[in-house]
Structure formats: C-alpha cells, structure tokens
Length: 171
Image 1 (tube, one colour):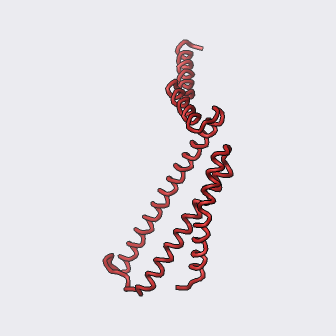
Image 2: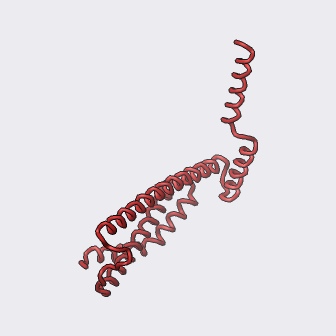
Image 3: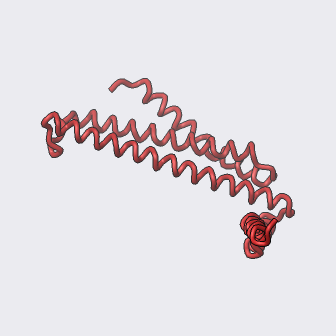
C-alpha cells in the first residue's frame, strides 16, 4: 500500500471514529441528565437511565406525530384549494354564503360537537394514563397514573353518557 493511500485510509478511520463516538461534552450532558433524573425521582442510576430512554422515545414519537400532523395539514390545504377551484369553475364566488340555516338546529349541532369533542378529549386522556400505568416500572408512576384514572373516571362516564345520547339523536 502506498504512503498516500495509507494516509487517506487512516484519515477516514479517524474521522469515522470521531463521527461515531460521542464527544466528552455530550457524555457530560448525558451524565447530568441521568443525575437529574436520579435526584428528581430518587431512584438508582439504572432506573434513571431507563426513564431517560423512555422520555427520549416519547419525544421521538411526538416528533413523528408532529410530522404526520404537518402532512395532514398539507393534504387539507390541498383539498381546500381544490374546493375553491371547483367553486370558481362552477361560477360560485368565495363571498357567497351558504343559505341561512335554522339557528336552532345550528345551536343543537354546535352543542353536539362540543359533547363529542369533550368525550374524545377525555377518552384520549384515559388512554394515555392507562398506557402510562401499563408501561411504568416505578410504583410512584403507576400510582400517579392510577390516581389520574380514578380522577377522570366520573368525568369520562358523564361524557360517555352525553356522547351516547348525542349518537342516538337525529338532527
């Protein structure tokens, strides 16, 4: 092997190693994060590391769901643009309002929408706390999730009852 080829090979290996391993600053910051978890939760290092990894996984999922929401928003914007284009082709102007509807029906629908959204919000909270209860390893986290579920249960039951009534009503 020639000296220049050997030098290039060594440079590539060094750069590869530098890019793969964390810097001392990154290691220091990770140690601080673990220490904060240990102090805040009053747990050992292994459990603090697991909690930190779980938090990072949750953060990744949040970023993924944010990207999904951005995609959905783009799709909705495209659909709105298509609708505006179709209105223009049909000879309808953007300023034209839909015919005035029955205000009593509109109020009823608005109230029903609020009931449905409230039920969906509470149901989502219940699912989140249930998942936290299932996945938590520490007794404190399990107890917190269980308390939140107990707190939300009456609210959930009332919202479910109202939701069921709305589902059976014809507009």
